[in-house]
Image (cartoon, rainbow, N blue to C red; front, top):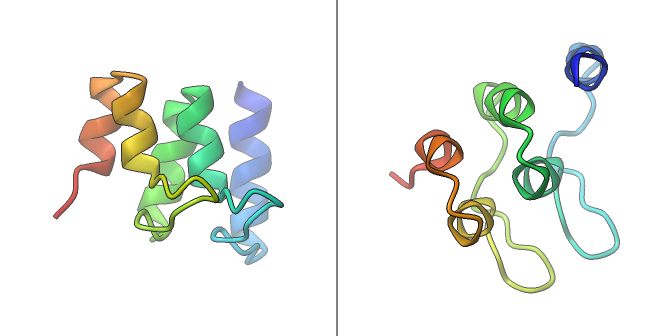
Length: 80
């Protein structure tokens, strides 16, 4: 896990697009939430990712977190 956060920090430092989407329209935030990667979610949120982006199934990252019943993640993604 530490390697993932280190790589994520390096990518952000070098201005990687944190809102880039894969072939099913998932952003790094969608994937981090699905995988329960709390530290990466915290990092992405602190760098202003768009948490309202929807994937191909029309799910936001918050909705994915809610589906997994992860209260710790939901606190980070709480809608305004």
